[in-house]
Amino acid sequence: MSLRARIAAPEEGGSGREDGHLVAVYRAKLLEEIDLAEMSSLAAAERRMRLERVLGHIISREGPVLSSAERSQLIRRVVDEALGLGVLEPLLADASITEIMVNGPDSIFVERAGRVEQLPLRFASNEQLMQTIERIVSTVNRRVDESNPMVDARLPTGERVNVIIPPLALTGPTLTIRRFPRAYTLPELIGLGSLDEQMLMLLAAFVRARFNVIVSGGTGSGKTTLLNALSGLVPSHERIITIEDSAELQLQQEHVIRLESRPPNVEGKGQITIRDLVRNSLRMRPDRIIVGEVRGGETLDMLQAMSTGHDGSLATVHSNSAEDALMRLQTLGSMSEVQIPFEALKDQINSAVDVVVQLTRHADGSRKVTEIALLVSHGREQFRVVPVTRFVPRPTGPDRVVHGHFEHLPLPRAVAEKLYVANEPLPPAFGVAEAFDVLNTRQAIG
Image 1 (tube, rainbow, N blue to C red):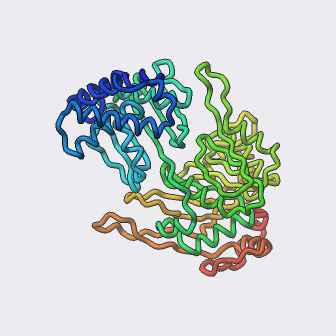
Image 2: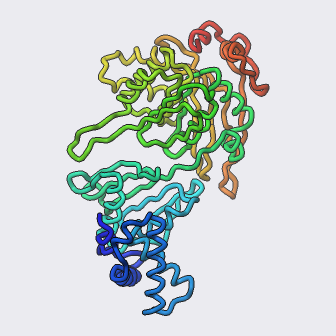
Image 3: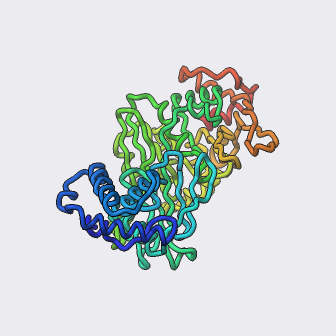
């Protein structure tokens, strides 16, 4: 969209039509004052500064008489409508907001610190909301209309955007913007109460000893945050390949190859799936493969990679418990076009997966590792997991804050032996189980 079209677009901004009219009037005045050719040559930050300066002169010259706060707000809103995303601009500038949910023009919610709240903001009309949506998706060369009413994309600035419009969305155009939190380290997660020092030591030992780890949890439970923190434990000399739908991981090692899937274009062609990337990654001599999330037939390829020389790989999956995570991996693996008996997938999972780390988002918005479990079954046995850590909550008090403690349980002897061979210390809080099914455990863990 040209600069003139972006500024002159017939949008009404703000939380009401009256304010929107004022914004539209001053946007038109701004258009008359500026040199579009000169503006087009400026960088985005300089362009915004120039527009704010010119608009300030217009308001000083022509009125209305406003307080300093009202004047600043009007200038910001006019420029936001001209160059940015209108009422969404201050939300995107607020670092405390992790998710923006627009449920039609009259309903805007945000998530802060794990809690969802409604804001007293609104779009002036469906048309203004649709113009904002079109502006967002156009930055990634996508379009949204009745023939293509759903769009899932990542913005150049990193946010993940989902759009769904009528006739599929009955409440009006619906926009969800998920902002990725900064990369947290494991010690920082301890400070947030997501895990404790002993669990950090155990997870660090698992990653360095090349256990295959599945991070499981519901939507918004912190799977990607934990996966990113765990990836920081991978030795810096190893070649790591990350595979994601929307690139969220922020690895700090030097030898990292980042791969991102690609949706089909407007003609329905050119799609590159997670499965395509997993298969290709096996030809790239990886030491470790990190899959942001498995959700389909690529699960089988990932399992085969884990059990055929790519130990120490990590992935996430949506699930509500460690046992459910394994069942979901079995279901997802069956979605591959490779005709493999459903029961045979148990063999693949038992030989590939070592550890399941379960995350839960609690009612107060906190995210905690509620279980670390080891898979000790082998062959086509029914999945058997041994929990070595679980979060034990206390009854919720008047403050509605979730309190509790982490309980640590003994590790199977074969797991302790594998850590010993890898020269990884066993955290003192865990200990070793007495003669726990040693033969089966040894076969399962490898």
